[in-house]
Image (cartoon, rainbow, N blue to C red; front, side):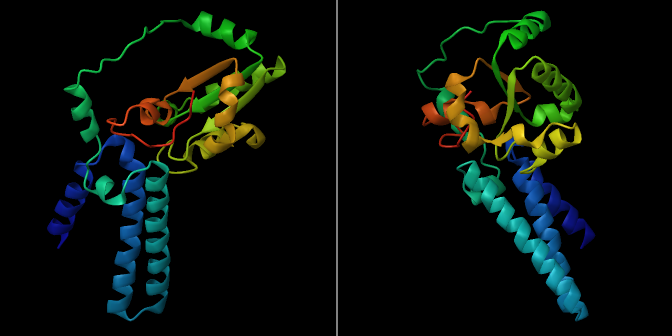
Length: 223
């Protein structure tokens, strides 16, 4: 049984795309709840049954909410189908156009100081780099210069919903300037500067513009 459980765990997780990992973590929590409930039936323990059912159902509901936020079906996430859309665009005639403009620390600092309004959109990369404290320091400096600083948080940014909010709260970022995607998306056109920190798919415009994209239809921060 231990060997089967190990193989099943590896099989369930190995094929999952990196951006789908929050859903998988939530589902693993859900599975542990259902396992506890099953153990409760075997042991005739009402407490295990109730707590297991609560953990299992809450994990499943959270997974469903995250899939809805990404405009993905739950089955496609669990089966590891993420990324199939890229194969379609790779062979197509459409090519990316535009020019990447490089910058450096000094130029970014000058732009931040000169801006009147700044929105920071953190992602999983900020969490991995543990950069929330540095971001908090930048925020304090800008606020001391009377710059209007706010944070835009995507529903699935980080490992789980609320992950970015927890990290920013840990770094003493004021809660009233941390806004959800729906609250801040309309403000981007009137914003002087947007600082994207460790975010990729949650700000990718191809989700809105390219029907062949792997994340087509997923709501994104419109930076």
